[in-house]
Length: 455
Ligand SMILES: C[S@@+](CC[C@H](N)C(=O)[O-])C[C@H]1O[C@@H](n2cnc3c(N)ncnc32)[C@H](O)[C@@H]1O
Image (cartoon, rainbow, N blue to C red; front, side, top):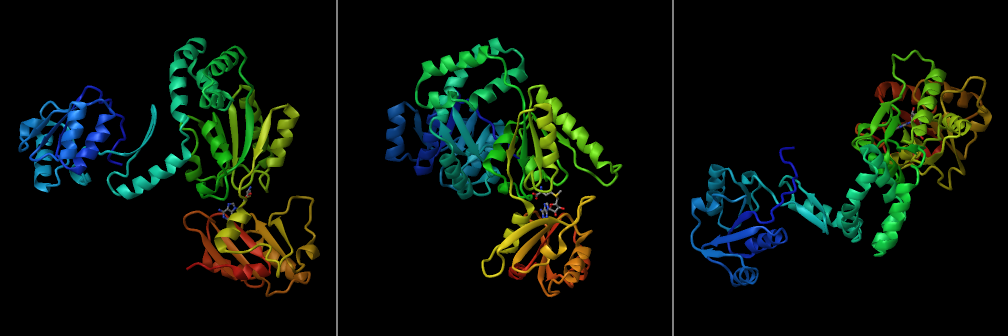
């Protein structure tokens, strides 16, 4: 990144527009809203630009551009439609160390006009560093559709009540939490509907009421691609004070966390002593302790938090300690894998049910092998390659057809994803030859024959 999107306060600041045609008019319009002191210099000024300038009192000088025109300006826009003149303007600005925007010439501009979404005091600027104005426009349309008009009045209201809240809550973290809670409350609707008196009453009540206690949100991050997170998961990440996450949760997802949230990696790594129970007990302890401090705690797990992820143990511990909690489901890896491989898990011709199973069997439990070997169903096998070959072998032993299709999917929805098809008879060899890394899930059953393969 070689640019910084800054918000310049241009009110009463001198700004020069060089050019008198349609492009210059658009830039003049963009600057008009800022109350800048605008001057226009152009060899010829169109009737439309002249009328616009006259109507709002902008001085226009109909003559050639001179180098010293830029002196003392805060910002200059070169919008003449003549590249030689634009370059002369740019050079003069360089000499006088003045910010310059050369229209359609990002390379020679030291300032660019971002695509703007404007909602009262809330302004969203989108810069592509001049690489694609069309993309910037598209993004602006998307953001415009997402941002309700009421966000402008909301920002004005919050701005006008900031002082009062600061006085009542001098401690910055308490204040931030207060505003976070308030923005999740009916306050937003009251302002959107214009009931400012009732909004004030609501705000006063919240200021006198003691702070809410903390909460633990067990959140599913999905299989890897951050776009596969639910909106609720995203919302929880953006409000979290602290995020305890697993190793499998990737950087793309963690980037969505609130910037100043504390992030703690509690995933098991290769050098760990291997005492999973002690590790889990310590996680349970920390979740409860942080929520007890009134923090918003997110326990972020790959896929869905309650599918093969020890979410059950964490719930038990939270219930035992009386800690408020909620579950935010996620797209489990099996579904992510099926989607990227194009496998209909319950195609009605081939599979009437689907089972999520693990290749790592918990001590003291044993899979019902004859059940798993039945046709007309799909098995989705979690947790790695270690037990996979043995699992396939057992299925054949108890009567499964050795030619049953099976497919291993690694790093689904992440860069470097792989799809390795085979049958339960030859899957072990195929997987060894493919030298997969990263998390893998296996889908077994007739529907696996639908799998697309690595191209
Ligand atoms: C401890 S389990 C957690 C499962 C998770 N709670 C879920 O719902 O997906 C980890 C296993 O999930 C599967 N997995 C997770 N992410 C995956 C991905 N991106 N591609 C393939 N398999 C994945 C692998 O089988 C991995 O060994």
